[in-house]
Amino acid sequence: MVKFEFRNPTHIVFGEGQIAALRNLIPMGTRVLLLYGGGSIKRNGVYNQVLAALEGCKLAEFAGIEVNPHYETILKAAEVARQANVGIILAVGGGSVIDAAKFLASVVTAENRDPWDDFAAGRYPQEILPVGCVLTLPATGSESNAVSVISSIERDLKIPFANEAARPTFAIMDPATMASLDKRQLGNGVVDAFTHVVEQYLTIPGNTPVQYGYSEVLLRTLIEWGPKLLEDNSAEARENVMWAANQALNGLIGTGVRQDWSTHMIGHAITAIYGIDHARTLSLVMPSLLRFKADRKQVMLARYARNVWGIAATDDKMAAEQGIDLTEGFFRQMGLPVKPADVAPIEISPDDVIAHLQRAGQIRLGEMADITPLQVRDILVHAAS
Ligand code: NZQ
Ligand code: ZN
Image (cartoon, rainbow, N blue to C red; front, side, top):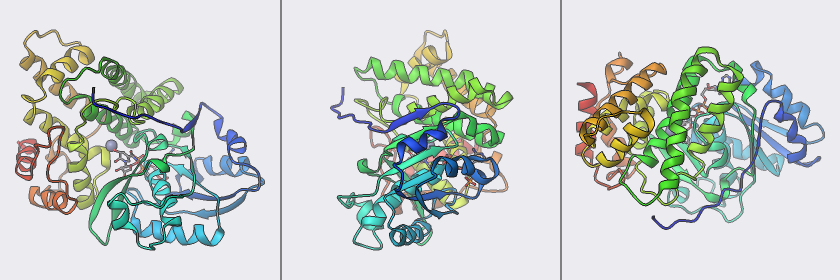
């Protein structure tokens, strides 16, 4: 097992009707910055539920956090937070709003008013604002992890930032908020969570049976309940997917194992250049990347094929290939693209993707740090064939 420390202090409040619990989580009189996106929370009633629960608090608001949140917008939100002298940031939305809130929490207290480079180098202020969140889209796990994925328009970059202090102090996860999600967002969420497990599990074998066993349960849960969620968006499907997506990226299954994340870094580049939804870049890249790395990942791929998909083949190579084919089929079943042609008329240029990875300093990817720009080109070319 790789040495690790594990601490996840986020207080999770899960279940239908739990938005009302906000009044116990934020003391009366607190100055709150309510942060949200393009207005889905106003259309589905979540905004009104939040206001009702926060009666007695002093509220400032910042709306308009974009999908794939922009650094430049977060700088504007920081001005609002400073002027209102808020004591907590409350993010209400999906991964984009929560990521923005977690990043904003450090921007507000940073001495440098343009702290991108400091944060990219891991230099965060010692004190940051606390963040709470009401999750409305299960996908990213952002509600209880330390990561913010932020885009800078000026720098032409989309990169992840990790600050332990930014883990939300609480996360309200009310599956009823998912009722207004369309099939595209539901499918995106399931596939994003699925790839989070894969990137921590399908690497090189280690002495980590607990992590592997839990990863397999999460994958089987998403395979069973993802299609049901698309079919009828039932209460059972919502709660199972919401909880699985949280557990997929709250740090637990990543303890003690080698991690990959190459699909995600290539995917961030594709989103930055073409604006394709985060999960849809992952479904485009992952099958080709797994085929390309099938030899290096063969032991875990064969285990995955047997324990997650129930494949009977005794030959590891054959089992691995069948496991990858079934993964691709699952992404399709969830309504996501698996070939560059599926996103036509967009044409993905390997050169542009590689240039983004180079700007981001992501030139050796994967659990063995052996995915170079040359290999990224091959992966994208194979994806297209
Ligand atoms: O902006 P609003 O109006 O709220 O609408 C959003 C947005 O248009 C809408 N939506 C959210 N909840 C809804 C809803 N519509 C109807 N009903 C609801 N209940 O859905 C759209 C997408 O929202 P977004 O927050 O962008 O989606 P997601 O949760 O998939 O987040 C994607 C972002 O998270 C990053 C991605 O890179 C991307 O920027 N990630 C963050 C990670 C992390 N923090 O650990 C890890 C992930 O790998 C990922 O990179
Ligand atoms: Zn993701």
